[in-house]
Amino acid sequence: MTTPDTATKITAWLAEQQSAMVALLREIVSIDSGSYNKPGIDAVGAALRRFLEGQGITVETLPQAKHGDCLRALVPAATAGANAGRTIVLMGHRDTVYPDGEVARRPFTVEDGIATGPGVADMKAGLVMNSFVLAAFARFRAAPAPLVGLFTGDEEIGSPEGRPVIEAEARNARAVFNSEPGRLSGNVVSGRKGGVFMVMRITGKAAHSGGNFTEGISAIEELARKIQAIHALTDLARGITLNVGLVSGGQSVNTVAPWAEGQIDLRYVRPADRAAVMDRIEAIVTQSSVPGTSATLAIRGEFLPLSETDSSKRLLEIYRKAAEASGFATSGEFAGGCADSGFTAALGVPTICAVGPVGGKAHSPEEFLRLESLVPRAAATVRAILDLGAGSL
Image (cartoon, rainbow, N blue to C red; front, side, top):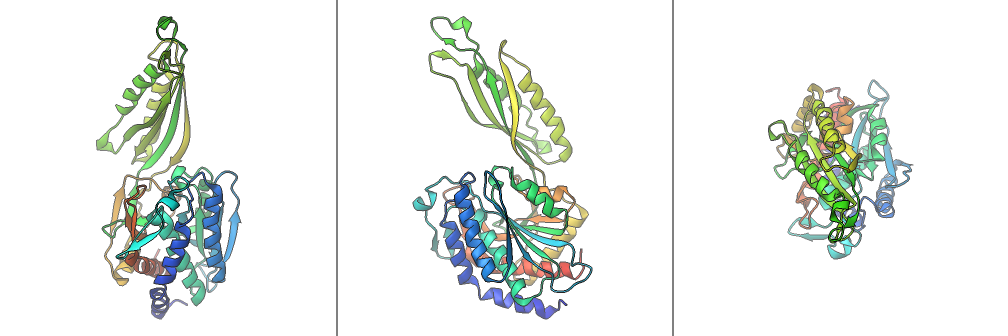
């Protein structure tokens, strides 16, 4: 049975684990694990598995064909009871946005309490934190409900394989903590935009741009017109943004372009806005401005929004009090970026995001982590889990 003394014992143990946390963080940051590097992502998973199994925790591998395998670590509930059948999920992804060789160019470094290296904040520190939280509950046999650590491998590209695993796990969950990096303010994230990542491919007709210009049909001209129309759908007041962030096409400078491609990023806040904007995008893509061109649209990845609900607000309040008891103030804030937390929230599961250690400048060479936040953020998660076990939600 959970007692106030349980939190004291667990957090005291965590307070002694700073060096061990940094050592595990160093190990996994020192592995290139970009989203398309399956061997690297699986090597990160192997390191986490060694640690978890060394703590007596069962780890199941859920194989994935193209991207990193998913790992499911389980700490059983300490006692049978009303909460023994539904899980509390600690979630995180092992892939990063960086190319192979980035670790050699920017190895893991610590200076004045700040750690740097590819993926150090987003989100390998969160993986370390989750692993030590699971280890703490296993060590003290104090899990108030079954605890699941879910370690996926393709979040940075929209979780094409991870999403079904996440959703299957969420259907039996009481609550989800997603350990994306904590905000520099110390806040967690209580709301996020949804995102759809698409590619439009346009077909024209090649012709010599000097000798027989009029026989050509320019796919690049059509792409340019479509980009303008798509960007015009941006509605900042509603939180809707459109960005064609990558373009390619053409055959040579002296050839009328026979093909062109543009990759589209849609962000939105309200779930109802997705369908309306997608209808307008599809109309722009399918209607030709340059006679003779044709185009297709394909979705390559998608995130659902993390929308606040009454139950997620209660979870946030539980976490806020747990953070206060762990020595830091926090609140919920909205983020324009997307995350796997939207998938669990969309299923009605109380979810909060960015409960991981505090860092910043993600996706850039300046990415950093405040090492002093490792233990307090882990302690806050422990206290919140214990409060959940007391029936607070």
